[in-house]
Image (cartoon, rainbow, N blue to C red; front, side):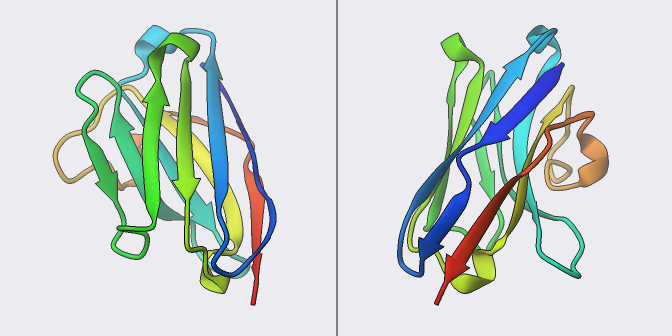
Length: 125
């Protein structure tokens, strides 16, 4: 499975961006897709995840109500719509695919088996 994340850029606080994660290869192996982010000097943290079969969505508290994760199964693409962006959302955003996760484990980096290269998001104040 190969993942390509794109859509990052520079935006002012309060603005919006949509990130895309395109999967190719053995996509039948993918159970769920997650977005993580890593700010300078900080650890990579969970942002959102979606289970492809059920459509169940999960969000970090810090983005709940502002970010929306969605999927396009036909095109093997997962999106992260980010609204009301804040300077603290500045980070490199990574998409990752999991062959399976349980309840409560969707936010763990160790639950994901394939990772994309990351796309940078900068929110100016």
